Amino acid sequence: MTSSRVELSPGQDFGSGVELALAASNQLLNARNSPNYVAQVLQGVNAVATKIQRTSQPFTGITPAGLQGQVAAVELDQPLPDLTAALEELDELYLQDAVYFHDSRYAAHLNCPVVIPALVGEAILSAVNSSLDTWDQSAGATLIERRLIDWTAERIGLGPEADGVFTSGGSQSNFQALLMARNHAVARLRAESEENRGLRLPLLLDRLRIFTSADSHFSIQKSAAMLGLGFDAVIPVPTTPDHRMDPTALGAALAEAHEAGLIPLAVVATAGTTDFGAIDPLHEVSALAKAYEAWMHVDAAYGGGLLVSPRHGGLLNGIHLADSVTVDFHKTFFQPVSSSAVLVRDRAMLRHVTYYADYLNPESAAKAQIPNQVDKSIQTTRRFDALKLWLTLRTMGADAVGALFDEAIDLAARVGTLLDEDPDFELVAAPQLSTLVFRYRPTPGGIPLDEDLADRLNPAIRAAVFASGEAVVAGTTVHGRHHLKFTLLNAEAHLSDIQDIIELLRRTGAELLGTMTADQKIADQKDLSA
Ligand SMILES: Cc1ncc(COP(=O)(O)O)c(C=O)c1O
Image 1 (cartoon, rainbow, N blue to C red):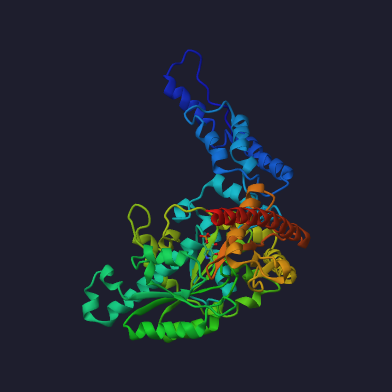
Image 2: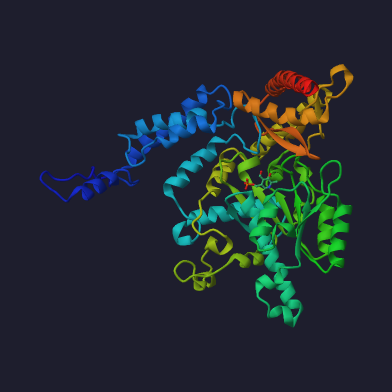
């Protein structure tokens, strides 16, 4: 039953604190306030929709200094009269100058345009506010998450004992996988000798090493540090010219470590590296990991979308051999941040993150088979992110999501051909998923621009284009040299959109080159006359 608004009776005086609480209670989501909830959320949603309709480029080019003063000037202890005023203020502080990933000239990082059913899921999950730690805070949400974990594990082919949990992102998924791998290795060390059995964990970490390609994501190093192993416990394995882990080099690195008395706790393969979209040779990596009794983790944060790809799914061949896998739904499943999962072949490994607390998840609950997801997670309170993927699959279907990624992969192939044939640009490698690493390096008079000059020029092009807001591209280095990068994840982007960006980069490059060479001439003349 919906009761009317709570108000003070005339003459009632409970002090200003009570009045304030009564007024504030009108902002609590409950039956009485549900019409207000609908109206306010619609106001917020409309503000975004209006902004998106009016946005004609991915960014305005605002600088931190340009916004800092405005944000600092907000008097947080003095609220505005209503949501309308707060949204107007937000428009100036944020919406107006945000970076918009739906724009077809956003081509920088692994951010995707998001699908609408997932946004409906986002609205529902935050309003109901289930917490996925225990059954008594989530009920059906737990079962939906579990079902999606099973579905993902099945798509990977991890087998009947597989399990996993949703996480906040690829970095957290990688961390949890390596935490399980580390503890698994430590358990083996303890089982090996009486002496080890008596040693506390820190004393057993010294010889443990993680092997991963030189092109893998930095969350592997960060995980090693957080696991008490140190950044330098990660042994980078060289790649072949296509930027995939070189299995011969991996074999050599493992043998060398073994000789030195070190223990390979894990080999991390990447299925879609951040820069080149390279997928490591999963069969070969698995065979080597097995030979050295190392855990095999596959970081498919980027390439995970291939699990639903109708046309490129074969690229993930061999992923089923992994002991654990990271999949980022907030990258190639077009989900809003955050939405990721870590999957594990053997559900028993999840015990490495289990700790029973009488106030939350007593062991008796586990024995009674009450599904408390906190027993599998490094988080406690946890969002029902799975709902977004659920509504996406239930309304669009998996193939449709995969088709969006396929479009981006196909677009990248066509852009690759364009860049390869363009004399002003150097493409480092043919695209493997949807990224392209290249640089502006024209060849005036048939001679390629000086390396050092190209090295200064490309970051300057990127910065100038970002400042214009007309396009957003990323940057990276290859063999120490600065390059530009496109990450394409927008199925709505046409070849002509990317051609526009290329022309913008060319124009900007030519202008900057003109200024740089003029500056250089002045500097040379000064040197001569000195
Ligand atoms: C290959 C790879 N792994 C892991 C991550 C980390 O994912 P997240 O940003 O969701 O933590 C990224 C991010 O781009 C990535 O490219």
